[in-house]
Image (cartoon, rainbow, N blue to C red; front, side, top):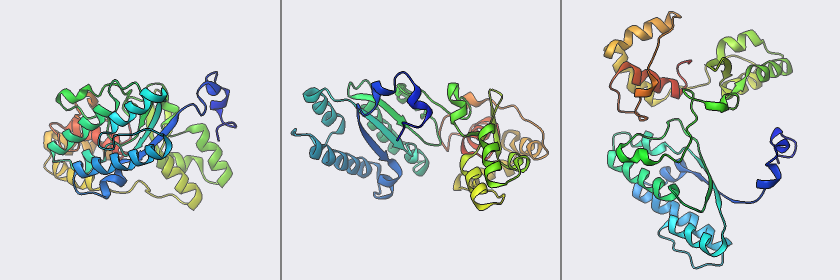
Length: 275
């Protein structure tokens, strides 16, 4: 799968290739199948432990997932790679339920924090790790976001050279594509929304493919009441001007909106504002 890609040229390619079992979890699927966070975690643990039992000849505890992985690691010295999609679905779907968020964050902390069976955990979602009192202790992750892409800027979306090649391949105007989808400027690198570009190329048109969400609707009341001067700043943005924002105040959730900076930072993470 990777032999023809750039990663195959890395010195560590052969060292890590096929050395770990991979656990892939789509948190949104588990959330959609259950009503509470407790039920979601119970279902997740059962499904994963059932699969572990099929692959390891060990009497595995099916009620405590971290302990199950510890048992396997103790007997086999096996380590795992975890790939988790929609990690923040609980924070979005239950944005007003602090207890549910706490239970979920505790589960993640117990699953990953200081565990010897974890070779790598890779989580994707809209929101960075939640700053939640002592739960900021989930600090084993390196956060990559549109407000701090670190050394991963060119991998957070399509970059200009890639978009030029696509425009040539699909006979599309690069200047028009840039006008529509050049959403972020990170370390002087233009980053394009990959879904929008793909939809534009394959559909051979230009449209707003990054569709509206419930979150934006909930924020409109803050804009209309000019909360902390937000309406004035939005007006400036619509007029083509730039606005400075402090992204460090954002509490990484959908409800802790204490300033215009918090709301504007959320809109950056959601993809509504260029940055």
